[in-house]
Image 1 (cartoon, rainbow, N blue to C red):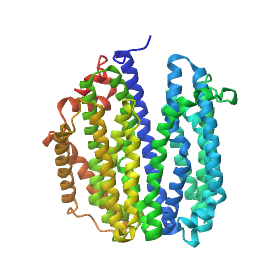
Image 2 (image 1 turned 180 degrees about the vertical axis):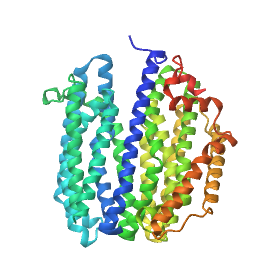
Image 3 (image 1 turned 90 degrees about the vertical axis):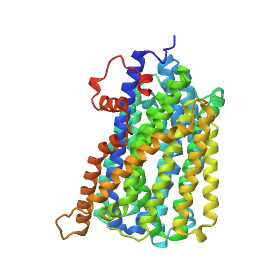
Image 4 (image 1 turned 120 degrees about the vertical axis):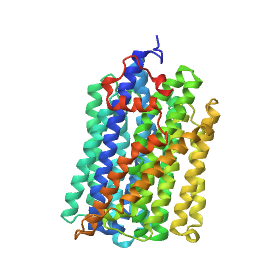
Length: 531
């Protein structure tokens, strides 16, 4: 007999699992941000802003190569999770084995030629001659390793489908930190791009091996073997896994357009500025990104209950939480970003301020666009999210055509417009899918949180006029100024939220319960939190 989604014991266990996974997701995200904060200035110091721009292009290329560990991994995870519930591990073995075989064929067909023609690809991307050889060798080694990574993604899916997402994220945190330490050491001894790529490749291998060993211990019933490969499950793989894979591959394609365009049109320095801006924006939306997996699982539970009213409340609350998590960090970067970049890397390019403003605007719209995609997938649909991807790619390509006329700032403005279109389309998709939801219901909370953010930034602006002792290091002086402003802004957050009534009494209690989980009422269940 299937468990009811409204079963209090089931919901409490699910809430505990979601909370644990979210916490480890935040830790993994924080480790990624922290390692970038440390390594990027070191990379720039050793390789220059142009060298960092080339490394950013290599990282983007690596993301494209990792197509096996994006969409299809989510499908594999679902199959494993279903098997743990119904005990049908034979069906899961057939789906995973057949999907893994298909991924092996696809990876070999795409990545081996990429490794073979890496020099021609680097030259076509506009890599300067001084970086051409190193960039080509880096691309080759990553292409070869990503064949293993794409196939090995099935074992990460087994770990996550076995309800040990926290374990997979612990592995990710460890290898992220180890990778950063190794890169810093190699740069110190004079090594360059190829050595950095080799470290990244070794990290991928280590992560796959850890997931492989853990999957055997967590779910020995799940087996990936040639004996389970069968044509009978291909229609299901195409229907479900294919839709997830398509939207993820389109996202990787979308993200690779601008880095290559900026490099070819404006040179490696502009590419480095663009990479710095996008790195800061990525760190700002870190919390909202960590919130998405919980929305996917919690939303699926509420949707399964059949209550349109509870689903409407969840959608409204999720938009409010996302706004609260991303609006202030992005606004802070837009206001104080140039000083942050200078304290962080020593770079003070005049185009940084405009680039940060536009990148933050694009990141803001993108956060809600992705939230809309997750909420749309809660319903089990997988069509309009792919239309959103195609629409964004088409918009961005139309901007790239006029790159010489628009200039660097114009291209970034086009990116912001493209993300706005994607956000508007997904809000339309949600309204069409969930008829009880009305987009205009989001405005009151949006206005209150915007007013609170303005108040917090005003306090930060006042703090800039508070004098500090002068020291000889200008970068350290800038870091101290940022610390002072950040402290004042943090202290101003709760009063600003209270004065603007951005948080209700029930929401304040819910936040305190999250911070003090042992005080939570044992009879509390998910739908009440939406009231």
